[in-house]
Image 1: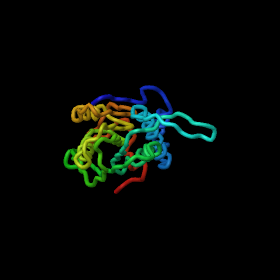
Image 2: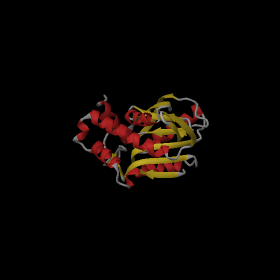
Image 3: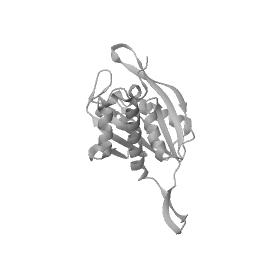
Image 4: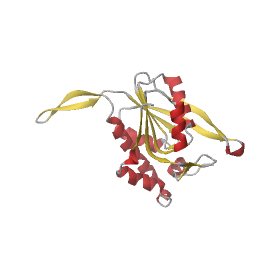
Length: 219
């Protein structure tokens, strides 16, 4: 893995949005939760955009010609359903010409709180030579992100570079990602890293179930 970024290491508006997403009282407003997650996605998109490739160009204005720089990359935004949809929308607000991929994954629990990650659906464009941004609101054990990444590469080929994004991660999950995703063409982007992971693999303090908070509890 090439680089790891933790965006809340320096105070910014991201810290405010993250605090509201964690706040058990503000969480009661699912629209607010979705919007905050969307805004977090926009911030990550902007930060990632700084490291992409651009081409010099000129734009005709009503009064003359202005020099500028235009993105010279094909970006693919990949999201783990359903929790990742508001985060995905934030990225899509900024990378509005991006191609998109979607993965359905869930935890299948057995005895003693043990579970395996099941992938049920994947839709992806070709990835060869493109910039892949793979996002999930919560990086708990790290297993779902690793499986999703491998499934995307198997279906779409090898991207030029991959950015992995998780607004909240556990220390254990970050370690798992680094142990199992060793390519130099990977960059890990995190909002915050929490130390504790429960027996059921929930991040503490974390924020709870991002999918339920965004769209309502499931049965």
